Length: 154
Image 1 (cartoon, rainbow, N blue to C red):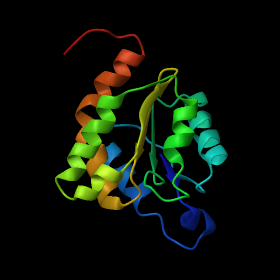
Image 2 (cartoon, rainbow, N blue to C red):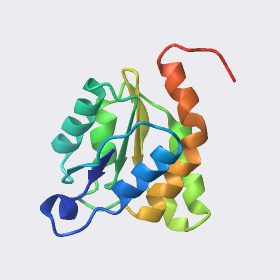
Image 3 (tube, one colour):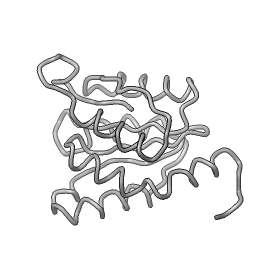
Image 4 (cartoon, rainbow, N blue to C red):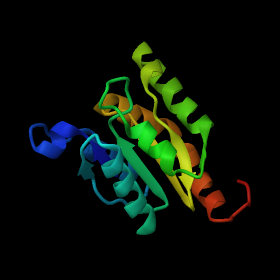
């Protein structure tokens, strides 16, 4: 779990999305760590994601930096380090958010694979973040199994 925020990393804002996402993952029976907090900087985001994958994470979730602002660079950082994208997961997350707000269409969050790890970018708002993650929880276990070579279905 990685929170991407200049304000949180500078200590001027509290991280609410990171802990909320950890709760969602714990309820879904994932073993979790974090949230690690990094500023909105491509190199810092990339370093944190790669370190998590190297440490053996099957799933890396980032929150924040997915919008249209000039400091919103999480999707760019993620796109540079993934082996391939999983567009259906990103589409599912945006569709879930659109039931609450049309602004969900502005999220540029990427879902992709690096090695055997699935990397997800969710919005920084607590509602957008949790709605996005909850929407894909039903497919995450199977996706991770497939990434580890388990091709049994169901």
